[in-house]
Image (tube, rainbow, N blue to C red; front, side, top):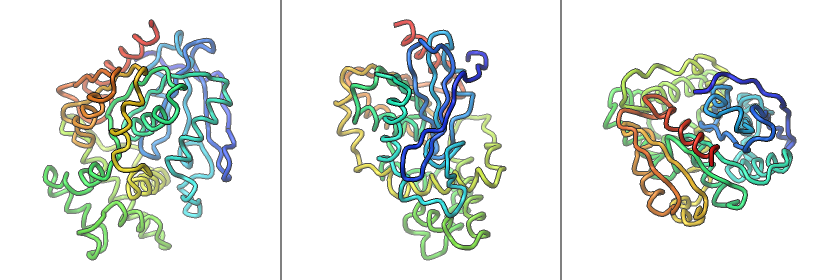
Length: 315
């Protein structure tokens, strides 16, 4: 990864609905524009993302999606309205940011939920995307949500049983994402906090079969933990606010957009068949499987992402 680099510009963009999104740019002001699309939903874009890019070659744009990171109002405030926080709203925000920054076309680099959002944006605005570099690829389909919230119990049965038992007994055989979404919007702060803890404990478990994983230190912060859980469960309960399977059906719309997808073989949170299915119908995509890697940028995934970004910069 490249050495740390600090932003040379930043701001808050009013995108309507009472929402303001935080953005920042770093690297070369005259370089190839690239947008970081963070995961979660709700993780926010921290400075480590900048280190994937050659700062002499890229104009690196980071933004915090609605309600998270430094964007306002924060969803960690229980009073913040989630009805104006959907995939459609996020796609419109990305377009508004592109216009605000005077970018004609940009490369999108996304991971996990960020790969879903990047694919949805590219399918809706193909003429605005020069390339895609995605890792830990997911499409946030109903099947994938079921896999993460229920089927993964076959891999981690003890931990999943605790996760399932975090919801009322009447909800345990139903939609667990929706059940947790109700709990984190409960009027009782103690109920909300317990649900956020239980959800994030499960998040720490299901990300990978690869060794060396440690609990995410951000989950120790009750404000981050609650906001993250509130957004993830909101999007999971609504299956990413996308028609089920749309990203696969419309993969042909990406024709002419070169892409690299980097996927860990041991990524059980985002199984490799998702990226494989996309690669079959996306004519200009290349899929790279990293045998020892799980979900995230570890075990060689980050190095492959940097190499892909370097290659696009050279091109």
